[in-house]
Picture 1 (cartoon, each protein chain N blue to C red):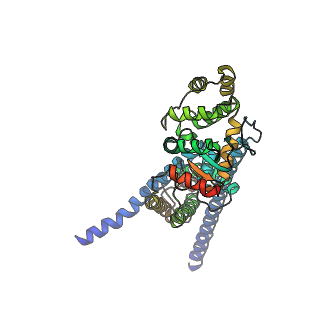
Picture 2 (cartoon, rainbow over the protein chains, first blue to last red; picture 1 turned 120 degrees about the vertical axis):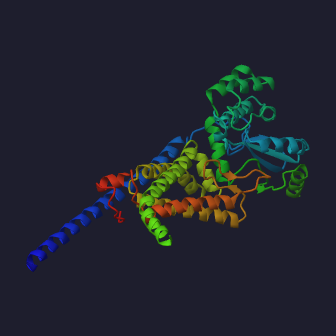
Picture 3 (spheres, rainbow over the protein chains, first blue to last red; picture 1 turned 180 degrees about the horizontal axis):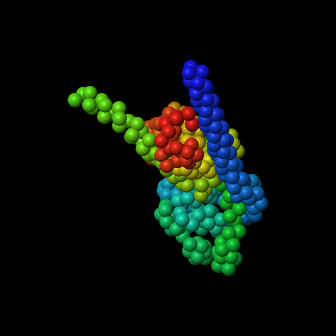
Length: 238
Length: 174
């Protein structure tokens, strides 16, 4: 009697042990599978990103030595401007301080390196930041970078829109005196899109996390008002 | 009266708990899927958002920024399926702790950045003030969902339950 009960108990213990073992194995394998999925997902992201980076680019005329921006003027003090053609704060900055910067350049006190970064591609449905920046490279080739940049800020499309079409960019270029055929094919071909990527990545590497960013002789300028910029340039020039 | 109330509560909890679990699981899945989807379209921007925290070299930040949206999407998909729920909840909780720490440290260092949690990210324009506290509170809410699933990973309508063969068996050792 007691031995039969003992056998039953033993059988139950074995059954429970086997069931526990099975559960343990199942948990182990689902965990291994889930970890593999997460690791593979991360590697996919990394390789997609690595594949998207192009390391060959054509440099437009008038670019700085490292090809990270377009140079305007030849003064002793360098003003680096990091701006996105879609960024409303950049437009405000241009309206507020653009005149002062032009003056500093024409007085021969400063030279501007304008970095047309494409930080806000997600804020238009057509990658307007990249297209506009690449088009500005085309305008630099035609010697009208400054004029084209001013015109683009004047016609700045709102964030979240499709932005200006390539045709509109070409019309604006022709409007500031660029050769419609040369400029047009450069814009349509997206000739300077790899350059835009280079400019953008260089800015990220330099710690530029937002636009507009202004540096005078490599130092961040917090006060972006006309007075602030003039003061920073004069301090740097001394 | 009191006894009845206590008894109904005692009865209710086992009945409600699995469905709270489903809600937590699907809620957390939605969080990860949305977070991943808003970032996956511009991996370079995602890298910049990570770099804006200024806690690691640019190259590393860019690589992590590229991998992160895909990991988030994978976490969302695993939670949606209910596969290895306890593990994915644990990974979710760990990631959220990292995010909260990052935001808190940006706050403490006086950086003016967007957390980049759901797209955008990076430095804020002049005049915009950061919203660190709401961002942290939101992440703590998500952390609570992950914590629930860590403690009670077994939920109905899940691959885990299907693999176990019997969704009604309440063994919490998955």
